[in-house]
Length: 318
Ligand SMILES: [Zn+2]
Image 1: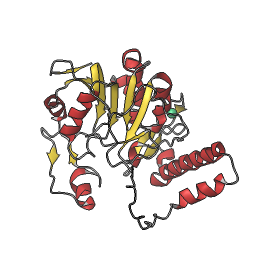
Image 2: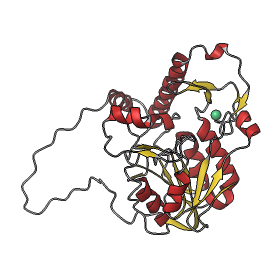
Image 3: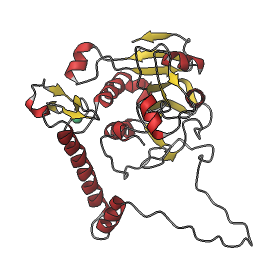
Image 4: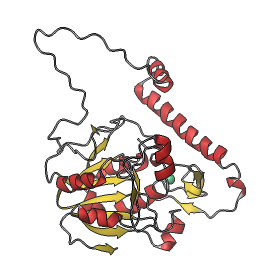
């Protein structure tokens, strides 16, 4: 639901690995309908016109196999992202740059600009990973045996460039409020799983979008198993002691002005850890060392919050 977070397109053909995870409640906003016996037929509701992309996909699907259509779509989407990088920062290739290394795809060389305004050397030109995707990959490396291998993993707004790896090593379920391209449509404040069902929850740059982040944090804590872990990140203004939030600001343009993006509901300060503790978590910080930040083209000081429900409520760095 947030384009900037998901530069790497993915195919929806990957089968769900949700073999052991069965939602306990109907998904919020679900589209289930029932017709009472004898009830009068409802008038037909006009359907929204499909997007141009959907119409092209449907046309191609009439003459090509689904796999070919998916490949064409992915290729075009990647070309669009790379074109945006070139047009957004055409001088980038004239600047000197270090050779970087992408831990996701193995690319070695220049990274490309990404974002508005463009961030220099942010995107791997091969797999289109961004800084936080590469940091997440390093985090998975560090915690794979305990948090991922064979575990029940729930990933909100999954990053396309890492979901295949997670699907291969864990029992993996993806979720998003929009329901597009994921296994499960749900809000983070109402997760349709029973208590203690999930080993690892991942939600990167999601909490700034939800209506009530404390409710969402408590809901994540509820579904985690004893010993489980939530991997969370949000944009933080490190110069602020407290999070800036005003629920009377609802117009998209006003939210962009106040919170940095049209669909952001707040802008976090350094008290993000305190909010997690209020929700009942103990918190650790995961970040790469300075040399790794250079090597893998990470944002300096970028961090993930590892929230565990069964740890003492203290913040420590790892
Ligand atoms: Zn890469």
